[in-house]
Image (cartoon, rainbow, N blue to C red; front, side):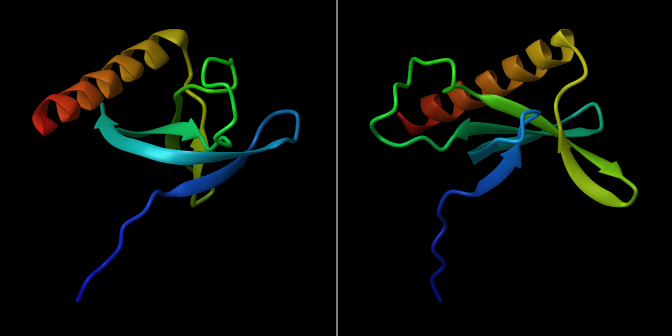
Length: 97
């Protein structure tokens, strides 16, 4: 039996009501919290250097018994978790070489 694994995509709505499609890159547990790293699912012709293209980090929270994705609470939390994701990504690249 073979299974095909492809990218995982989710759609989130920003504070302006715009839907954004994100591709899941990685998940990590840190200090009892689950964090997820995403990249925007952008068309091939999109400019990867634009402000709309970059890693998006969200955390999983439970509210009223429902699992939701939320932005991080502080710039310090974002920096710490971003650094952890970057370490994981670079470690994965080194292992592939």
